[in-house]
Image (cartoon, rainbow, N blue to C red; front, side, top):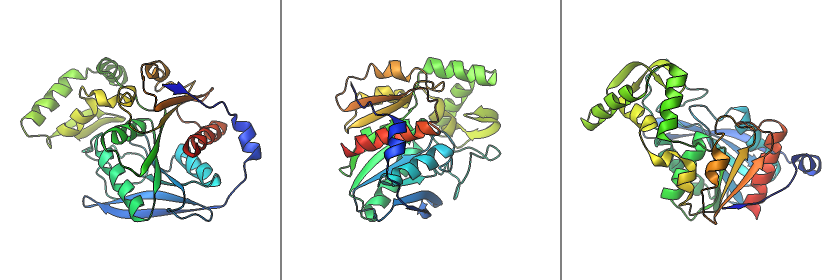
Length: 299
């Protein structure tokens, strides 16, 4: 693992040339659902011109979050167009945060299919060079896709504060967050899945960020099972594309990421730390993040 880049955000902010950009929502059909994405084009560019970024958001959130709006805007100012989908979470034409009032049937790995779908969409529009970018859980899903679904059009991978995972940490976090043990619920869900009853709804349970919701057994197993690929540093030991992991030194969501990345012995993987940034890289931290990402994409 190599560590590169030592540029400063303020200098870049003061010296960068501003460009106009156009943004529009794209809607397509995927597995009988309408799915949507925010397409931001750099001034004077088409998708066939140069690099394009495919940006995947974090856990059960959406592409309208300030972090993602800022990244897309700043990329466009540097001449790089981007596409930021809303993961469907099995909801038709989903916008905004997850709706905890409705049954939760989505799975962590569903994102891989949707990343592939939007990558194919970019191809169909003439894109020739795509950088996959993902934040938080979306960083893990992006890494997973890049390792297991390699494609010549993928030139680089950028992971922003990607998810780390261990069984022990998951059990501890669930108990702390919901004051109830995870294991009995998971065992019940795993039994249902093994019996071919994965669609069975578990009622009045706590699921990711939703309290007292309902979730299918298959969905619950997907997010809470003992699955090593949920840990991004573990995945990156097998990275097949040049990959940059961007971390915030004040990140309390994945505070163990810097330590875990030290175990990644892969010359394709680099890291960069944005000093004092938390998990969401807002304001000037977003500027430094994008400056670093653009340098990596163009090197």
